[in-house]
Image (cartoon, rainbow, N blue to C red; front, side):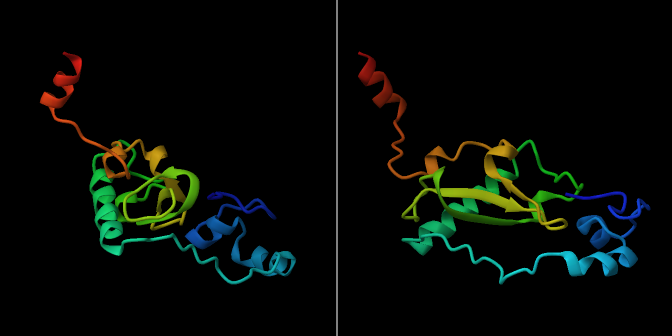
Length: 145
């Protein structure tokens, strides 16, 4: 979330770092001792079962993001320059190359906000999922007869 005014004194915030934390440099010095200590960053590790399939799938998802209607973050930065990531999630896509369903997201290169793939309204990922069977027109018509 980006702030336009300092949460302590109400003055307009000018630089990006101040807007991210919600405090100008002077007020930040006064309130930072009240901030909870941060632990080490979380390491998101997905369960890759085939690295070659996983790389191919991620390349395909990046290509599909080019056709997504939503391409900019709420901060105005282009999400196409962001980093694509996945992590294990029960409600995710069952992508080839991964042992568990994956939540697919892209991180904004400017503000760090993570956008899930479905929020960008990108093209379907069904054909990249395990157990997806494409049928030819002849197969589909053959089952109707």
